Image 1: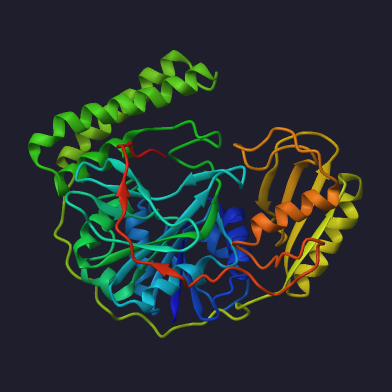
Image 2: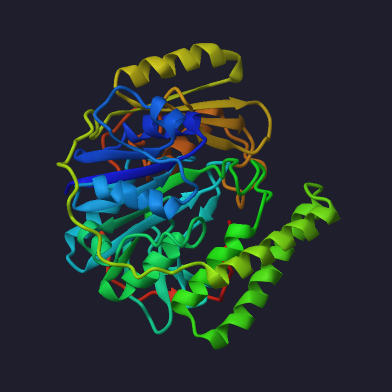
Length: 434
């Protein structure tokens, strides 16, 4: 099934280049890449057949619609420029669309340490409040709306059936940032099923930008306030607004207070940022809401990105003393067409971190005896060979590491097409956050 992958970027050319490097390692054999970016971002792209769309306005919804207009795949997927997909990500997202009932699919998102999950699965009500979804962690769960709750996906890890996306008018430009994909999921909900695919995973770094610092401290809450009011105007009754606004103010204040307690904000910063939230709420009350007409199906022909498809996996590991040698081996293996995972583990109990290196390989660092999963034992007495074998097994769910227990490749990983059509279980409410 042909897939168009849209990446929007503004002011982050280095991160965009890293994302494209990872995209070129996708095992889905038939994808086109559409990059919607400012001039520095477009200049950072490699000399490959990529659909380039010049765009330099601070409106992610309008930018995504510009990408949709150039797309030609049966499925349209989205990835943020500060996110990196696992090699099997896109093929796992696309597989559920073989079922004609599916209009959207989404995967799980790992956070800045590359191991802990930042987002799993949720449904959203008419006020934009999230409720956890219980899904099959190894398969695919097909979810339908239930009452006021509609399953949602994250914009940095999402795919949609192109015809369905066009029919509802794409993304609403009134959402310049925040709740843009949530609004789309609410509008798409009645059209069909949403597939939640836990093994379709991306690593999302929350890079610095106009709305937040690199440490996730907000630079402004204006657009969060404005988008929240726009969402209420689009989906909720006026009688719902006071309680929803109060809940938003409470959740955002608690978020700021946590940053203050950790020393990242001063008390005056909390007051200043709350004023930007209130200003955004006021602006959102009067922001123009245009009718959303279907988007035209007039894009240029499909432009396949060469070089994608299944690749062999290769694992390298050793002490940081051998770092220079192992990095050179990793780069060489990438040039030979492998998906490379490098373990650099010192003789400590430091927690592990996992990330995609700009040179095209995955790097896991930390202590030989330290935890990878944060809810696991804080101390693990293992040999280097045993520890790397354990981590290989964990990672083989989402990339071609092909676990054998001794660092070699076996050629098998879990079936990504197994689908469970189950009724979702909804948990307690939680607020959207960034």
